[in-house]
Image (cartoon, rainbow, N blue to C red; front, top):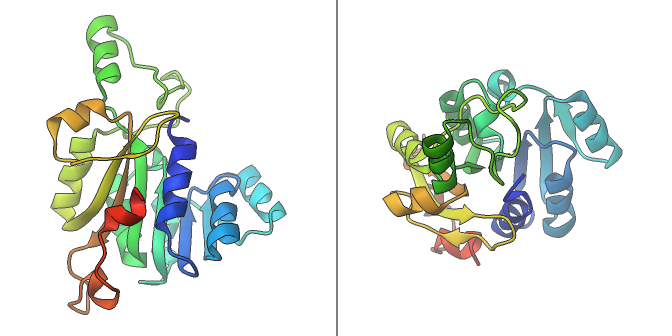
Length: 225
């Protein structure tokens, strides 16, 4: 999956040492293991695939089998510092509700997804009249698990609708470092093959904001450092 390793590197750079992290759709646990080894996180995982859960348990990771569409509701409010949804948003049945749940159970969310507004996607549809296959969308339409593809612009609109703060955003492409972007820019919606976002609630239930309890620091210093 294009941007996958770049995605993992940026998430690893973002997450602060010793924090509580829930990795949703954690697959075989590669990212979760990286964060545990390099950042000493208190990590948990949720994975729908039995084989993925088995692989995670073999690695010694605390992972349970579950479906993001149904089972996030079982996690307590503010149980984690970070909720990670890496290249999974487009495969869930209810992206809006899942995004709301991420920011209920965690102080911050890290979300990445393939950008259906990328110029190669648009060109494939315009010139070929076929569902596109690109580095970030490598699977034919009849085999893909993607059911809710979106553009960077679509995702920004959803964040605005839900009152979600975009602390930082970056564009990803295979073999290239993550590039900080203005996600509201029309040109970045064309240029970004995949995107990664650092999100938080604008106001928490106790009236504070996510940065009230930590020193002032640009989020993008963490995400794109």
